[in-house]
Image (tube, rainbow, N blue to C red):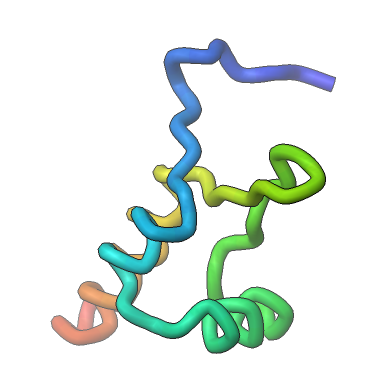
Amino acid sequence: MQTAPRSMVRILTEPQVEALVPFSSSHRRRMEHAGQFPKRVRLGPCRIGWVESEVHDWLAERLAEREGKA
């Protein structure tokens, strides 16, 4: 299994994701299960996060849809 260099991957916390995507945590969870939002990364028994680039890519797709480019 290949691993990316540490400098390439940044993990966003739930408050950071909520600031970018103002959905409730339960709505984001439903979207994740439906394959409509990036999947969370389990960082520990009580900590989760999201890969920053995946969240930004998801947002870019929404903007492209709005502009009719997708």
